[in-house]
Length: 218
Ligand code: G3P
Image (cartoon, rainbow, N blue to C red; front, top):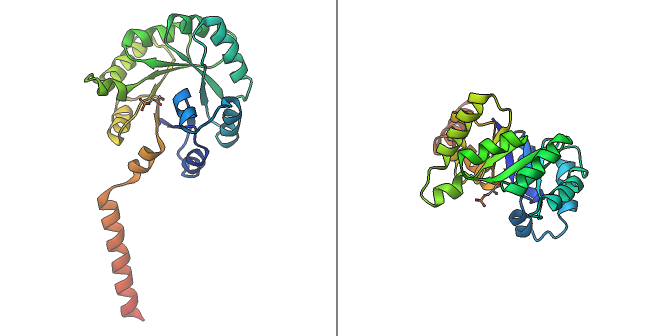
């Protein structure tokens, strides 16, 4: 499973990249706003200078023509830009046009299996089911991922599934167990993936034992 980081923060991207496990980046208008960024294009270019893998940048327009125009500008920023469009009727229309022209599209805000089916049929390279937001309203986010994997497998669609709106290491583990293509996660969760109390306890014991034997030898 590929791991993307879900952020527009350059320090987080640099750090995650230095750990050697980062395959790409996803952003959205809320993540840009969180960083106080008004010039999205400049930030996307900066991110593409750090990460060679896919970098998702989202359009603001809600009509198909506006989305196509904006998407083309974003796609021209760097070779590895994937354009995020919302899963709406205009979003589908724009996806078909842009995919036919070779633009990588990430259809986002996906909350149902049939939305994901349409994303694949429209030619999206990626589909982003938001698992955490479904869990938030008492629905099973990972069950949606399982359904999408079944549907795509049934018809051999090659649209890649990005498990998004990830809130815990358990979401990441379940995404991997289900065989999702990609999981995009906030920086905090990357650090949580590493943490285990027995790792810390074991390391402390190894160091303590090493110190003991060293003092005996000398
Ligand atoms: O990639 C989509 C993600 O940023 C949404 O996450 O936590 O706002 O539901 P969240």
